[in-house]
Image (tube, rainbow, N blue to C red; front, side, top):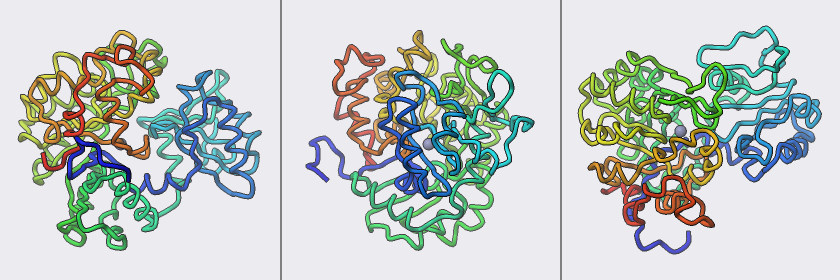
Amino acid sequence: MGERPAHQPKVMREAHAHLLAHGRAMDMVQLESCTTAQEMLDAIADAAVGRELVLAHGARPESWLEPGWPTLDELDYASPETSVAVWCFDYHAMMVNSNALNAIGFGIDTPNPDGGQIGRKPDGALSGVLYEASAGLAWKQLEPKGIDAGELQRSIDDLAEHGFTHVHDLKAQPGLGEAFKSVHIPHDFRLVLYPLVQDLPETLKTRSDWQSDQIRLGGGKIFVDGTLNSRTAWMLHPFADGRGEHPAGMQLMSDKSIEDAIRLCVGEGLQLTAHAIGDAAVRAVLDAAERARAPRGSVRIEHAEVIDEADVPRFAELGVIASVQPCHLLYDIEALRRACPDRLERVLPLRELIDSGLKPGRNILFGSDTPIVRPNPEDSILAATNRGRADMALAEGIAPGQAISEDEAWACFDADA
Ligand SMILES: [Zn+2]
């Protein structure tokens, strides 16, 4: 680690990580530096030599010079014999080749699963691109089975190297707590696990076997919408370039099931963390917290990338925590300008949230969502203070009026706040 920045808190918390996926991604083909579909195809062709399966991540087809995935024929040409699965960096869409489609049993007659879409060409043939739940189904069949302690160890070591000692896992797999018994965790580390709400009953049963003063169960996690990049974030206004069937994104949970999830977690004395990226999803969670009369601090909204002006004061009023990842702005600027040019002022309104009464580090928390983007805290500091990349002037950034000070930004990582 380099020198400690003057404002950096002593106890640094990464409030939104995926520990197993982070360790696993360190072993996958990394496509973050690709700027065209051809570069992705070249990297896949190189990696496929002598392998049965190539797993890759970090692709940003929406941001490429010519936006969009390659065709299925092109991917098949790059890797005719090896199965290939390429995650979009946001882990909400995936492209697979024909070998992988055969391996997972997806064909022209396969219906879309609930909450997912199987990409098709105009003639109905598969495009190889899978969205949301259909990508998840494919991954379940393709990914390495089980939890590997080596992957977890790599993950912990890497986060420690980035200066973190407190880490929240926002989609803890069943068995994750148990698996940490075979991992060396530095003595000052604290891990908080948030499994999916549907995995919560099972996790509660085993909790006493693994919970310690270093690892604890924090609550449950739900997904209320998709992502901006896949245009599946659930928005109050349609995207400027939305998909035919879902012009304003996707609502992945009913209002009633959001409320039920809150009640379930609160009933166990736990928190409910809700993935909500679009302003409609954020509002739905705030509404549900209000209806359920959730105790202050018991509901956390993860991401909250777009927040309507009317909803900003409701965080402090209802005691709902905003858990945000400003670092995504550095990658999403171009995509945001295409997706919601009229709503850019509503992207990550950090200035308004703090002015409305949220206290950095206590009820407004920073994280990275690693492995979706790298867990460098400096990236979030830059995005929160400059609203854009280092080579951009503040005025060129997204909603420059929402910039906060460097002190405030570092404080959002402070686990002692
Ligand atoms: Zn996440």
